[in-house]
Image (cartoon, rainbow, N blue to C red; front, side):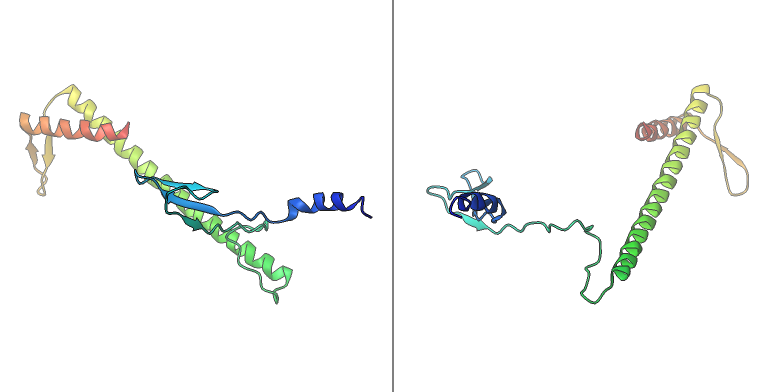
Length: 154
């Protein structure tokens, strides 16, 4: 029996929780430091460290109560997973719509830039349907706006 005592202690030693204190302190420059030994000539605080749960359950899973059956827990978990999947799909759909809108805006700006490169007369149409021709300064301002907006597309 005495021969097995050191072997038994060696096997149980890793299972014992490690008890160590962590000290937090600031140096003269204001930087925060963490050490396992208190610093000399410095005021320090001990840090309370919380460990993560060891279960393999997802973080978003609802907490199980003692009265719930495994089937009820599974249904709750599936419900949470479905909600997350739906939220992700909605987010992806919104991002895809924004990306398509940005691509269309960039294509329109590139088309305007090509029109400016070709030259010619430029106009806008008023509420009565009449053409209002732009002068050279207005065309130059519009060309600058288009070029600035195109920089965001690249």
